[in-house]
Image (cartoon, rainbow, N blue to C red; front, top):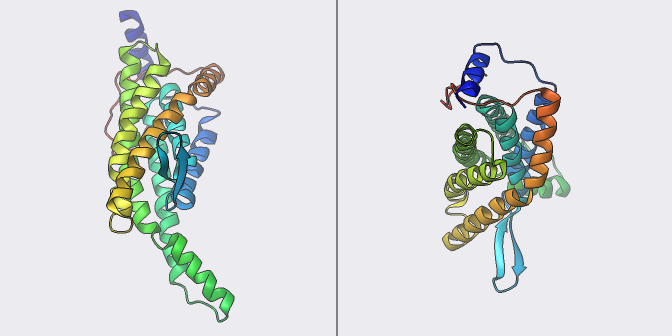
Length: 247
């Protein structure tokens, strides 16, 4: 183990290499983050489960866990700093989209019944986008970086073993932080309080369960990238401050 640490310490002194697939994963991560906040987050859906009955959940569950999936892959293969950069890129895109949504809503509406109804639809779908964006930028920033931090630390502690335990464990912690903030900040005063609690708990369970089910895919993608990129980074001397984008 000592030899491995010395080896990785020496690697830390060298410039980080360019990667063929990082930009593609970054773009996919940003797209998923935008979809999770502007397509599904505002809808409270319901599913009927045996013994539990009707269980409410947010529509963003279709997208959001995929962002943690990408976060795990980025941290495992490229390291914490690369995932941190992806998080900031996603937040910048989300902030821009939220601002532009408010500008479009505020533009004067052309005459006609169709555009009047269209404006009402825009206000219904995107009128709360600024609040969702702020809540997401705070909660996901906290949750995603906590997830990445725990995954990076656990990788060093386990010497790269037990990937399934590290991805599931770090996701469980990160999702707990995220779910504890997002629904309260985004929907308090809009949804009934009991529904916020129900949806937050359901989201947490479903998102963590999704990570368990995605474990085989995580193994496949991680192994593929490590082989193609010739990269398997260990965050031994990493600066874990969240307030930077430098890698």
